[in-house]
Length: 374
Image (cartoon, rainbow, N blue to C red; front, side, top):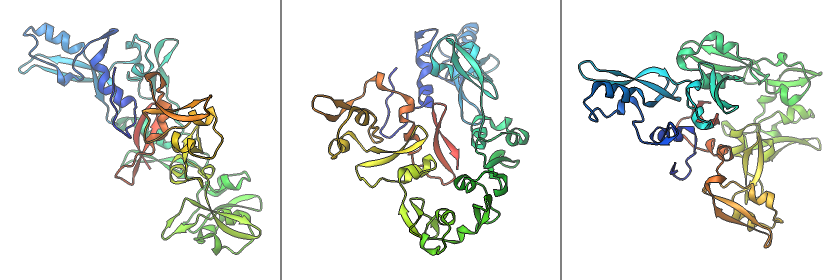
């Protein structure tokens, strides 16, 4: 199978879906209709043959949330013959092969997905651990208040609240008092009662403090390190997430954030290292520094080594990779082979895609780059 990608595109399971039905069936490479409605009625005049041909199609269909599955076709011979999707899907047990990607396109059920286990395509329950995952994994018609609000988030500072009008599951920060620990950073993640306050540690407890009245580090003249470092500097009317407040020598001063200061993938993408040859990249659930390209690393003054060189991912040119030459101690760009491709290796490119709405962003999950609510 050959898939051509445009520059800055992200390969995911949705791209695979566009081609797979044209080439794989019964272990053979054949060509047939991608969807029920693409069926060629002129192939034969025999009604029984048309019915068999129609209903043998493994059609590519979308559910109400835009997720693609292999659907079943039904032939209706009355008046004007129609080969149409019958609103049911092929389930995990229908797949007899061993390809993990293809298995994932079969329907596992309302709260399950198809995965390969012991060389068999099997339904596995979906572990929903955040409000966003509930929205992404549960179809529109199956979303309920009970289902949303029974989701136990892995984020200890939030719970899930259901909106009946939009049928969406929203995260809501729990109040400061819900946190019984003493870690100031964790305490700060909980929700305050007004925009002029935030959660902070005082007398060993997580309570509301008024640190958000400060719009810059230097506005704070006190001596409380937690209050100082809880301030998020502003640039005009908006917060500047590339800066932070640090308490040093009795003063609250502003510093540029390092990659490691990022708390999530979106913040990571907005930060930049002091070294202009490097960028911040989200890898293995952490924001780390990485050279922009093989050339940037090769032209830097840093000592060259195989691990650093071959871990570089060029987000503007993922058809190539960096290769280290032990003899010359150089890091050069070479073309990738098919065997080099790993979906997860370019997962971070998904969130780098810019879209034209402020209410959604691109996120990578379950081998797909999809839109989710911010």
